[in-house]
Image (cartoon, rainbow, N blue to C red):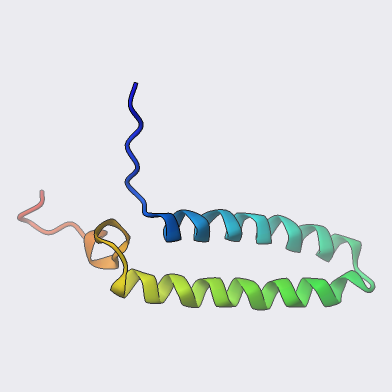
Length: 76
């Protein structure tokens, strides 16, 4: 069986980095105390990732662009 990649590398990296950040934020949020400083820094990283994804959704590859998400009558 041959695997076909639809999403480009930057989009896949965004996805996995965001997933890792969510897990890390859950862990540091539950630990509390001094870990909340790390929690805040990871939150800034999540914000940066979201800004990247918004930009990549405008200028990225064909399948990563937001315009390809919306079905048009011609595509249906």
